Image (cartoon, one colour):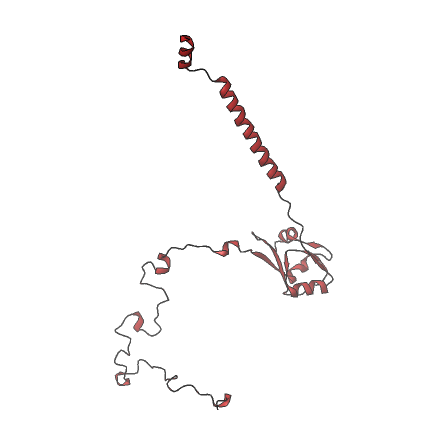
Length: 199
C-alpha cells in the first residue's frame, strides 16, 4: 500500500543529467551535441526568446487589433500614512492639500492612502480610497475618513440638453422662415407669362 514514506517515482521518470564537454569517450561525441562553433556552442552563450537574427521578429510583424481593457484602468496616486505627519493636527487632508505639499503629482483618477508607517496625530482624510491597515491607524490616532466633495462640473447636464434643444428649435424655425421667403419671392416663369398673354 502506498504511504507518504514509501512514495517513489516511476522507473525511468528520473535520469541522470546529460553532462557536456567531457571528451570523445563520454559517448556524446567530440562536440558534445552542440555542433561546430558559433554562439550556441559556447559556454553560457544563449539567444533570447523570439530573437530572429536581427530581422523583424514575428511578434512585431503581426498586427495588434482588438479591445484592450487597459485603456479604462483607473490609476490612483499612492500616499502612505507616514507621509501625512507633515500636516498639522486636526487639518483636512484632501487632493488640493496633498498637491500643495508635493505628495501627489501628475494625473491620477484619485488618491489612495496605504498603511506604511505610523500616524502621530488625528487628521480628517478626504480621499477616494483607504486601505484597511491605513484606516485602522488613522482612526487609532483620532482621525476620521470621508469621501471627497464631488468635483463641480463646468456645465450642468440639464442646461446642456436644454441648450441643445433650444438650438435645434431655433435652427428649425430659421429653415421654415427661409422656405417661406423663397416661396414668396419666387418669380413666375416665362412659360407662365406666355400662357397668360395668349389667353
